[in-house]
Length: 102
Image (cartoon, rainbow, N blue to C red; front, side, top):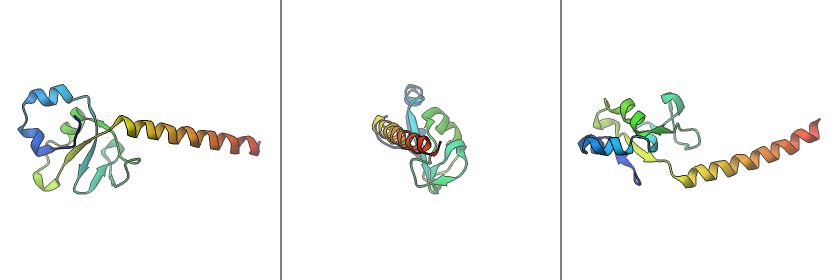
């Protein structure tokens, strides 16, 4: 899965599409925003949003009607690398601060 796909579009695709992409990692977006981790609440920030497999995301949202405007946005490798770099910088920074406090 390369581009975002709407729930209503996925419902109309052959079942083999979902089977072939069920382990793709996605964010869930609906009319209230991105779903947070644990499917509890909404956010507009990707770094607060939960990341789900397409299979789990579909299972959690397949009951939703078109008014909810549910779509699945693929989580790109670039995003994951960017987050890893950010967290590595933060760990280095916090380690330096911690060493000064001791």
